[in-house]
Image 1 (tube, rainbow, N blue to C red):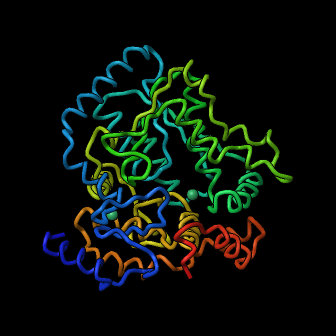
Image 2: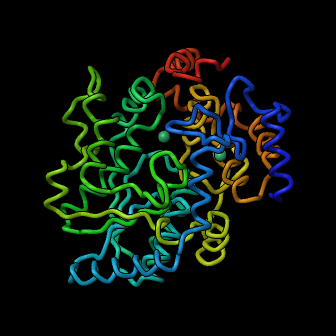
Length: 377
Ligand SMILES: [Zn+2]
Ligand SMILES: [Zn+2]
C-alpha cells in the first residue's frame, strides 16, 4: 500500500468512515484484525501486535539469522551420525513442500518426514503430500487415528475449544515429538514463524520451544478435558505430549524456519508450483487457493471461528495481503464482507459425523463468546 493510502485509511478508521465488517468491534487501524483475536493487543496508535510483529521482519538482519541456522544444522548433522538429521512435520500444505525444499536442497539434511493424519485430506492434499515425498525422495511416517475416534473428538472439540479440530491441533503438535523421542532425533523443523500472527511470539522474542512450552500447550487443551462418556483416556495416547522430563532427557529442540529466513507466502507458492508441481485448490471461505488446501474441513474450522469471534479465514488472508501491500485495507474489508460469512459446504459433513444439527452448533458456539465478542449480533 502506498503511504498516502495508508494514512488515508488510518484516518478513516479513526473517524469511523471505513466500513468495517462489525462496527461494534474495534479494528486495527492498519490491517483487518478485530479485537476479538485471541491474545491481540493494540499500541497507543491503534496498531495491532500482529502488524508490529510483522514489521519487525523488515528490520531483522536475516544474514545473521541464516548463519545462526547453518550453525544449528551443522551441529545436528554431527551429533546425528547415521541417524536422521531432523524431523520435518508435514501436512501436504504449501509449507510442507517449501520446508522440505530448504531442508534437503539448501541445507543438505537427511530428514524423516512425519505426518499426523487429520483424516480429512482433500484430493489435492493427498496429491501434494505424495508428490513432495517422491520429489524429495525421503522417508516418511504417517499416523492415522481411527475414524470413529476422529468423529467423536470432532464433536467434543466443539464443546471444549469451540472448533472442530482438536484432534488435528493436538496430534500435529504431539505426534512429531513422540517420534523424535522414539527415534532419538534431536531437531524438529517447523515452517512459518509463530511470530506471524503476533499473539504468542515476536521475531525478537521467539517462542521458546522447550519442555515447558509443550506442557503449556498440552495443559491448555490437554487430553484430560477430552475424556468423556464417549471417549476413553486409553484412546488418546497419540495425542499425548511427552512430559517436560521426557523432553529434557531426550534433548529435543524445535525451530521454525520462518525465524531464520524471510517468510513470503506468495513467493514461496509461486516457487513450489513451478519447481515441484505443487497444486493449489479451492478452499472454502476465502479468495485464496493455497492456504489449508490439504484439508476438507478448513471451511468449518473458520466458519466456527467466524461465529464465535466475528472473523474467519478471509480476515486472516486479507490481513496478510494488506500488510504485504497487495490489498488496501478497504479492499481487505470488502473481501471479508463478501466471504467470511459464507456457510461452508463441509458443514453438512460435520453435522453428519457429530450428529449435531446446525441450530445446536450455532447455539453452542455463540454461547462461548467472551469479552468484546459478546457485542456481536
Ligand atoms: Zn494490525
Ligand atoms: Zn482447527
